[in-house]
Image: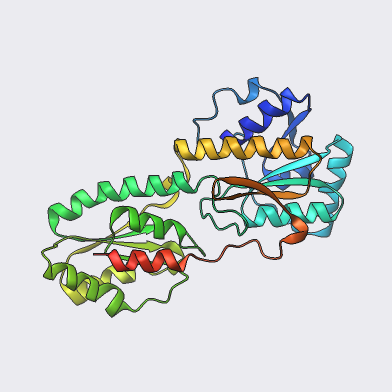
Amino acid sequence: MNAVIRAIVVLSVANNFRILGILRGFGGLINRDVYEMNIHTVSEIIEKGGTILYTTRSPEFLTNDGLKKATDSCRDLGIDVVVVLGGEGSILGAKRLYENGVNCICIPCTIDNDVLCSDNSIGFDTAVNTATSMVDKIRDTAQAHDRCSVIEVMGRKCGNIALHTGISVGATAILVPEYKFDFDSDIIEKIGFAQENGKKHFIIIVAEGLKMTQEISSEISLRTGIESRVSILGYVQRGGAPSSADRILASKMGCFAVELIVENNLNNVVSVVGNSMSPVPFSEIRNFKKKFDFSTYEKALSIST
């Protein structure tokens, strides 16, 4: 998110816009926790993970009273456009502001990459690269001890990180919330096939949304006799220096958002489809959550060993 904040601020300054940084999301807007931003405030942040504006969920914003406070803040602070960075929940929040007369531009920022109208969201590439790097390290131990490593990655309701990490590391099985797996055919038989072809260590990638990582590991040990260990990667996937691909994507999205503001083309979600960016109006979006890519998942299963 810091890379997109930097791009927005730098290009906004070039267009003589006044920039206010809103701390901690919609809650900060309600409490008017803001500060003036300029080029100095965003220098040397592009390489940093997280966000200098911080983030938090705001139950108050979901109430009518909280929404009114946020709307009043925009009016009293002289805010013409709110640029919202986030996933499905943040975009829904921006749409609520828009429906109450506040102009907004949304930029998809979520490691789950599940925003419907955009192929890519900021943070996904970094999360997958981080998870892949961690699994590569865990594999060294699994290989040395002929173990099965059952590795849990982030994704409460979305299996995109698990899917892409699983492909990247050549996992024996990839288990996601969107697919009701069969333990015998999707895990045990896969392990057996790999054993018959000389493999002695195995990587199982599990999305956290399944909530059964330890049970899967225990059952593998019981059914196969292979020592199985669980590794939960957790919040390591959300931190660290962003990948170059994410920095570039964020910079391009931030610039495009400011260009929309200059053109007075407001109340849109910045969308990336292929190599092109376009604005998708709030009025055209009925559902913000992207469907799982079963085509890629089927290909992943066909080459898993």
